[in-house]
Length: 82
Image 1 (cartoon, rainbow, N blue to C red):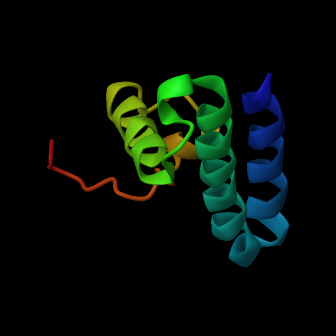
Image 2: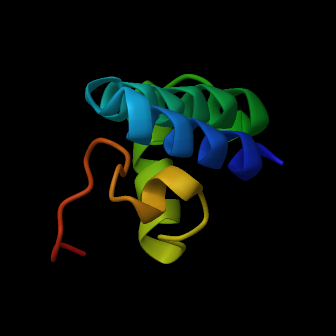
Image 3: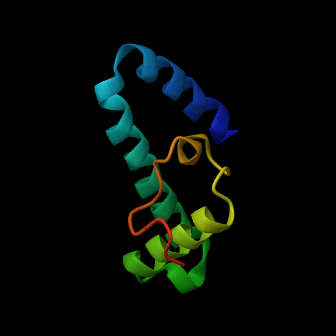
């Protein structure tokens, strides 16, 4: 459901406001961390732990979200580390 909306944003901003696209997509990762903190009790008290959880999900499923397919991964992602 979210991917459809995000893909629409990518199509629009990628064509007309390319400079605004990257910050918008990075913000989605912040919202995903916030969602994970609410969803999983073990992540509630720690933003870094929730961020690392999202990084692990991104490593496991790099095509899960439309913006991850473009290479806008969560903070803490390093290519080749693992």
